[in-house]
Length: 111
Length: 113
Image (spheres, rainbow over the protein chains, first blue to last red):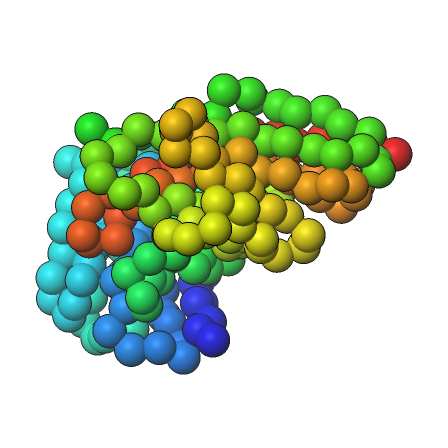
């Protein structure tokens, strides 16, 4: 079975600072990978997904970007954070293209 | 367009009683349906899925879900609720061939002793 790691677990950053969140997956190869943001403990917003190395699709235009430099590594970045970027960021992996498995999440607070 | 609706923001049930968390969907073609649970400040945990076959799907922690094609529903059920089942539950449907999931807004389940 696969394991999904996310770090850091929590992060407090000032407005205008850069961001880098990392997600790595163990126990599978060539998964589809996803970044979600969850605000106020409710609905999930899909931000990016990737079907392979270097292949990124953006779902919502914003000041965030994603990269997949290795098969099991997915990075979420920003050059300048906004207050509205605060939230709970979740990485998910779908090895079989059906169900997704989620990491533990990163709580980002932009001050 | 594919969509998922969870009509109840919160469901309250007494421990030991049966529980149902409702989900309806709208998709073109055959649906792939999923239920997830989320505890506070944690990632989502996969509970069960319906792809094809028997309309009653059994999953983790004693949960099951019933697929009803005519009513386009996929309700989550458990015969006897536990206090530890209190959490946020999400229904989802797969949209397209990229494996993207479309999630409902979530239902908070509160099980009282």
